[in-house]
Image: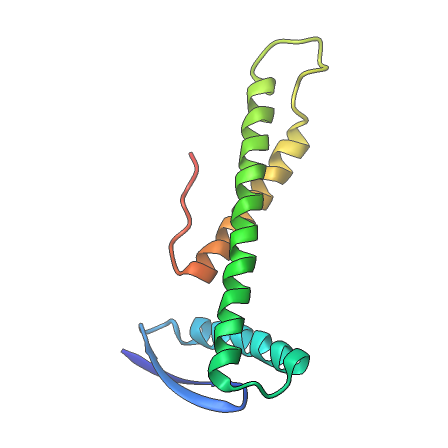
Length: 125
């Protein structure tokens, strides 16, 4: 196990992680620090534990919204793909650039969700 020291709200925390994950852990700690500092600026000195809980809830709220958007985009993408498979005079066909953009956006959202949850993103065929 590798060791890394991260700083959140001017406090150092020594943490263990898998070898090679030190930079990723430092990045995640930096993001959490950003949330804690923002909340501290909004609410003042309300206690470390309360700030940490509020930051965690804020992160989970954002992650939930990202998952909701991703599900909506995936549904829209499937609808567009379905339209592209049926012969029409062109009016019902999916724009290939739009389909590609939505697919790329969906992948980016999955990557963000994976980073926030620590759960690997699902791969689409």
